[in-house]
Length: 431
Image (cartoon, rainbow, N blue to C red; front, top):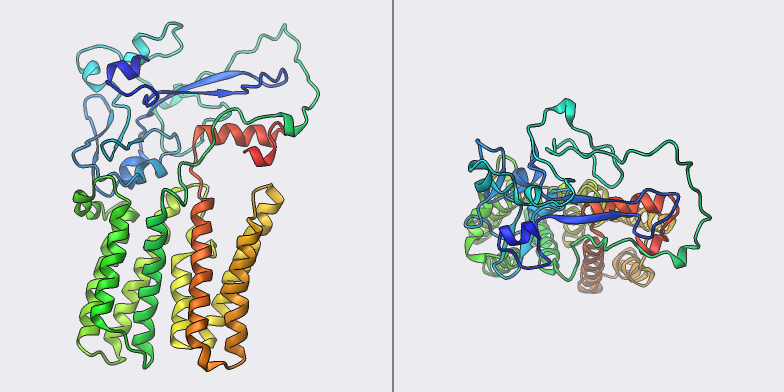
């Protein structure tokens, strides 16, 4: 409440939140609350990820501050932060976060949450590494150097440890919301953006290595639509130009710059009646570099893993579609089989861990995206070339959509669910 009032926030959107461990009051597990806001890390992931250079550090207080006038509302900082500190303000289209009550600190006061805590659970002081303790369940362990000391509960040794019988999983509810904050519904424009980018790179690569021809005007229109889909994701679209400012650290900036460079170079190359020489191959290589950067954008999601390990990888999709568009079975077949193997392994892992495998989508993806096109191809059905390409594109669209359905952010709430699930307290489907 102190945070909400001090910063004039809407109730329910406080920068400080309370996460509770063991809300079901299991007697064999500790019950405690984590009062968390921004930890103003030594090596802040939000600052490094932000493509617009909207984050700075106050030299006097050490506070990591967000300039809302520079923010483009891409939400990328919230993907990178494992403490779930930056919050999106949908009303204004920008991110917001704890300011450390920077103005109060400069006036010699403590942060509002500290000064008004009725139990003295929150404190404020200068900390050195030797005094920082964070060994509690549900607090993500990172190398970011969060400036927070969490003191574990001190158990009274005179009280014997309590035990309890296991509760059947269907009767145990999740302690609190554990949604990732990323979904296909919220990120549909990014799904289409990355898929279309792979398609356009593959078209240029096919034109550079075969007799295939791509109309420059149609390509330019498709490129403009693709970049428009990327900007549709932004909360402040008129500030989209700022997304290229952090090439030094942000994969998002690198993705936008490399893809824009590819679209510009490819349009010029196609318009100049290209041959199949080195210029076209060089342009295609820029495109594949852009797809690599697109995959790396998601590397900040600690639960996603490296993009190249996913069957929906933009880079592998670009190579696969190049083989399909150019009619080169020697290229399409091994990459397609590799993507199929990654897809099957992922579904097997989901089944083992209790996550939804989305069987109907899986069957459709494999049948339409692999079985039908390769059967037609191996049958030498040259008249069905358009059908082969259509089936492959539908399969890739399904896989890319599933990628966004499966994305998860690291947050304290997810950590709580993981710990309880590991102890058999939660059913897998409720995690």
